[in-house]
Amino acid sequence: MSRLLLVLASYSTLPAVLGQVQTREDALRCAAEPWGRYSASGGLYTVRGEKYIYTFSGDTRSHEDNRGGVVSTNWRFRLSGNGTKCWERLADSPAAVGYRSTATVLNGTHVYLFGGGDTSFAATGHFWRYSLLENIWQELLPSEVQGPWPSERYKHATVKLSETKMLLLGGRRGTTVLSDAWLFDLERMAWSLVGSNILQVYRHGMTYDPRRQVVWINGGLDGNRQRYGSQLWLWNVSTYEIELVPTEGPGPSRLASHAAEYIEALDALLFWGGTCSDDVQLYLYNIATSSWCAVYAANRPDRRDAMVWALDYPKFYTAQGDLICHNFGIYPISDVHMFDFAAPGQGWQMLYEPRNERGRGTEAYCDGTNRGSCQPQPLLAERSSRLSQPEGCESGYMDSLSSWTTTTLLDTPTTTTLPNTSGTPAWGSACRTVVLSACIFGIVTLW
Image (cartoon, rainbow, N blue to C red; front, side):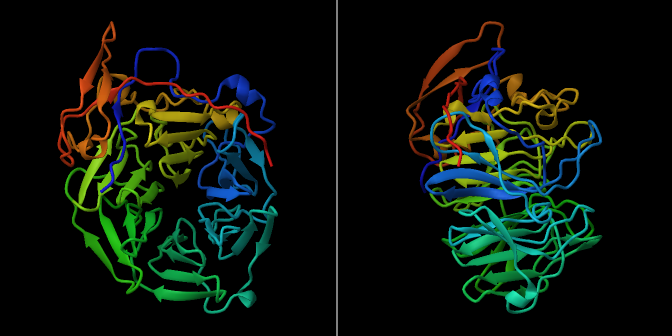
């Protein structure tokens, strides 16, 4: 199994927000910024050789000012190239296509979105196609698509099986939690029901594993609208049978509206966000050993759920979302963060720091930075060094690095270089922490 370059880190006592890529002066050069939003749809798509995070619709309500609601505005954030990183406004959609819907790109040119909530927060059964090249929306009607039609829903999940197929599972309609599964075949331009009682779930994490031709499912809420625990399901997309997978170690607890990805290069699963019960760690599931590893990287973003995320290994991105842990309120934000597994010593990097109050999270104890200041309590890494869970589980992913530099939060910070003497045992040596470092990016040329 390939090694995942991760690092455990603690915050230094420096007042600056380390790892931040964009300065406030850079942000002011941007022409526009979306209101903070959550429950948008989107992902990372490549358009004319450039990579962007796209975000469609979403809910802009905030308990701070009681303004906002479900919108039809759409944006993208450029990741590749040089220059100031800015949000760019796209064409408005005919309806609120993204509110707790899904977005799946097929054939590399069009994004397909089914369902979602409307401006009244009611589930819909609309089916939309968005052209990445032309920036144009089109609604696909039942008369244009063969087979039966999925019922109205939101808070469901889809995964891409191939360039022409996507799979949909679960969701919610009113108080009803759905358990059916649907396959959309672009070549046949047809929906088909592939299971009527797969798993009753919504707000779940779901990711496709092409090596085994299975879908992994974690978290979400059940038919009684209660959160699942750390259960992990394996769903065979050939037989459409599902099974509960026994796992070892402290896995993620009660996640919902979180990020879920399969990292093919590592044959591992990644989960992030969706709870107030952790310390914003990255959860890694080692498929070969059926064991969990919780990794505490530096500069972790504020706790949140319902964000947009994307994996472009070795980089993992997250944007927007709801800062869920402040007084049980709703506080949407429009920041962008990135974690580079190839440069773990840098920790998380803030690619975009919001500049206006409707995107920064200006509520009490939330200043728009990535220092964890929206937490009921500070991140543990701001107080002292932090080990992985279980201790040493990260070693199998770190053996290719020869040494680490550690720091602890003392009155006079000390630095020590630790040689790597662990050899190559998987999941079994002492943890290491690193001094945080900053990274600067340059200017973007917008489409």
